[in-house]
Length: 427
Image (tube, rainbow, N blue to C red; front, side):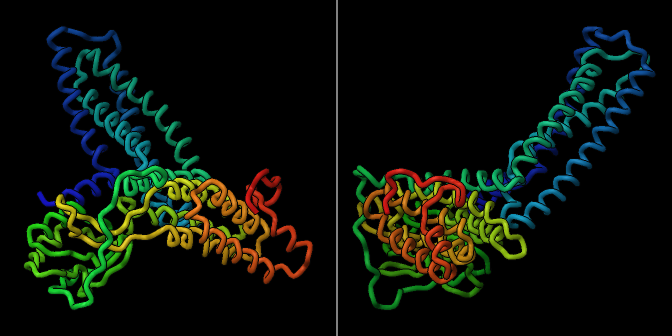
């Protein structure tokens, strides 16, 4: 199985909510048969009236089916409403929530088990299947209440932002595993591609967004062909069919296009797999929508800046990828584009600063974030932060002609408006 096939299978399983509920149907059927076989062998029956038990289980089974339909319908509607007020890119995160997946699994199991128990009631009522079906419905009711609580909290702006930040934290830790301070792991010697034309160019067979690529696989291919492979687009870039996907340098043979295609995944929209910038994209989109004149909700934007600061602080303390990989002999074999610290800062700050230029609350919160990062991160991270601070000051002078408003916008405030300036913050 190729890397691309494994990636597609894993991504499909992670992004689908129907697989576990569907499997639970067959598990429930097997459990009913197993418990009924034990009951027949041991002679376990209850003293309940068969007709009454059949009525109760029939009602419970019908109620469970109604519950499944209601949960799915309500979930779709609530997610659509939340995506309209936050960002459509949040939909995928909601459907990957394990609480939703496991809740539907319990509901489908209980529904199927109740039907199976109902079919096995004749003159007497089997003990294990009857009690399991009844108590399964009770567990499903508790699970439903828990699901409402979790989804309701997850669809609030604070819950959505925290979820996006959590996923961003995980992908940053995975993509950039080395700490910046005290890192003793040397990277490969920086390589500049030759000015001459590449020995081969591999064109993209289908359009889409670059989702991820197999680093080790491409290094192995390049080593076997004694060449240097350049992945032209960056993860998260859209690439149309027919555009260059790979360029090959060196005197070695050009690797087969089929092998290269199996080492990169192209899909309809960005994912978190190897794309730390996607988390910032979601947070910035939510902040930008809150700053839209049609919504005018700067407090939601401040909540987004809280999570942006959390991710920037975590990212700033890590050694960012140098965009090249070497083989076991130390020879660079793979070169690819990767964002640097300035790219992340511009992604995280620029649009929020522009859309929130008329908001004193946003100016104060951005200023507090940048000053805090300058104080806590290594000195080499500070230059772009100072540049963004200067731009915030220029925006404030442009949008706030009154001296009082300008003075107020120039104060750092972690709440935006209403908090006190933290002591010891760098000016």
